[in-house]
Image (cartoon, rainbow, N blue to C red; front, top):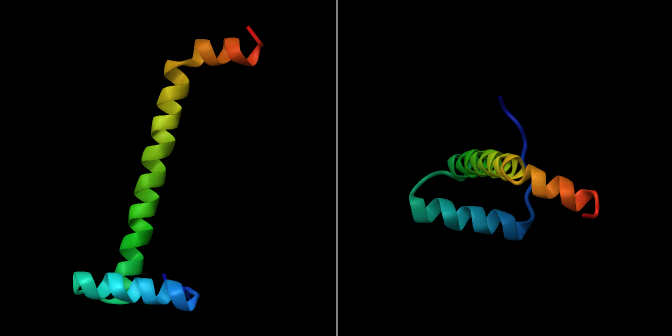
Length: 66
């Protein structure tokens, strides 16, 4: 799916540097950044859910002011 990504000059320069360091296009670097962000976000959400489940009793007591 095609989309337009509007970047500030500083963001564009950072993307250009990152792409050049890796020897890839800016488009490929941007796609990779989105993939990595999505993976990190999913992992974070899973860890939060695991922590909530693990400490549910303590969190419930804290919520009740105990």
